[in-house]
Image (cartoon, rainbow, N blue to C red; front, top):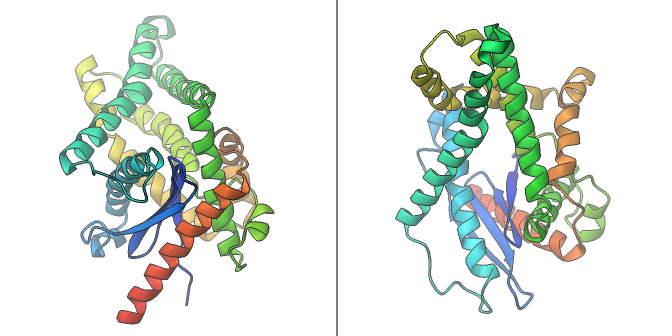
Length: 297
């Protein structure tokens, strides 16, 4: 039986792992204890529709926004308290507001601002295709500057260390080794299925797709295209990631993903042993919950 492909993300003083039936969270609280909890995945987002090409990319994007926001919120509560459990939990409304704000911020920073900047220089460039390439270069530059700047913050550097621990633990699992600190320490903090690879593909795809659409429209129409094409570009990006994952050992695929692996040097850091222990706890919980669910069926 084919092994399930686990993935996840770093959170505040912890790691979230998305499993087949649930997603698990492990966070180290201020007393030094590792607090773990699992949450059942949404039935619709994890249902039959997830097998439909293109649509599944959009569903996965929505799911990752939902569980990513909830995981960050939960980890923030755990990491800031002395007790084993949160004293309170954010309402669904506050999580939705946070998710919507994150979407607006991301689209504005990485799609609308590059459009406005390139539009200012369009009269000088005087070639739509060059304007789109210029817009794409600005988009990539903003992303790189953003990652570099936030990486200077101590709290974010710790998140990047947990990001590295997550990748190393998944490498260990995929190589059929026991999930131990010593085994995990020998693996790379870079992983081809990282969200960083997905983001880079989206940024490159946006240059191609917006180039095909062209710029012979009003500024309002161009703004709308940058907003409403994001899910489509993300869906295409997911299909590319999925197809390439089947041929990840091929030289041409390795060469294609080399830039994303290099980019991960900015978003991952070498973790300490305590952070690796947290990643192990999260991945083990996800595997355990999946195994329990399979046995029930």
